[in-house]
Picture 1 (tube, rainbow over the protein chains, first blue to last red):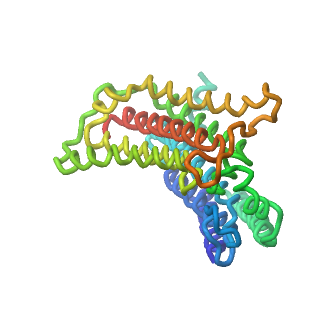
Picture 2 (cartoon, one colour):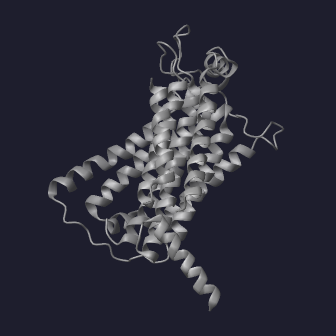
Picture 3 (cartoon, chains in turn yellow, orange):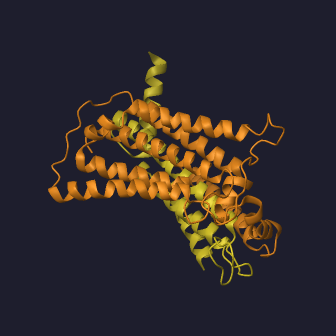
Length: 119
Length: 235
């Protein structure tokens, strides 16, 4: 159940990254896709009636798989780093072109390139 | 946009989605008794000395994972500071916060730092770890800078000191992973004694790595936050 929800979230995020034109919405969608993949990873590590994988004495219990949880840790940190860096790029673009519309910015960049080539 | 390129975009989206779905389903349909699960759950406590098996996985078996993670974080901090550091404003006006906010921030700031220390040093026996600890401590510093103004915080936490802490933590981390090589052991192997699982001093080098990662994440997050604030001119 949680696994399917994660896949749905991941799909919504990926489609939104591809088809929405606003750069900030694209970054929000990236965060959504990241949350979906984290949900998938946690669901993969789950076992029926599993315990938290922190226990020294209870030997015979069923534990959740610690490996996907360790991967989730990486995913969270990398997502934070990527979002911060991408936001900086969006800020620079907005300062220069006064727009967050990716297609409009692309047109302005093309125009700048043509003018730069001519002069 | 022309019809053909729209169709092409749709095709790319659908095929990417199919591949991701296939990979995830293939991973999900594995039986629970496959090797990594059994290895990590049954043997990690004896082999790493850490009762927190997740910490055992990411700071012992898969230390390279955490190492590259720290490097990616370092590159992101460098990028943010490079692209935002050109026009910094010297004076940031403090918001006129009420007495309630200032008092509660002064009360909660040391508690957040204490929680960060707890999460970093006891990550081997309880839920926690360096990344979470660094994030908690950095949000404590952010809270204090919202209440007291970023200039007051920067008078105590100088930027050059924070930068030195960030680079120093990364350097010590890298040297620690290479230290086993001159001693004739494979790189990234754990040199410290394991200790008895469940004790405060257990898990070999895991508390050391957690503390270093916490320092690194605290310094890096604070550098990112202060770059945004200085660039924007308000907090």
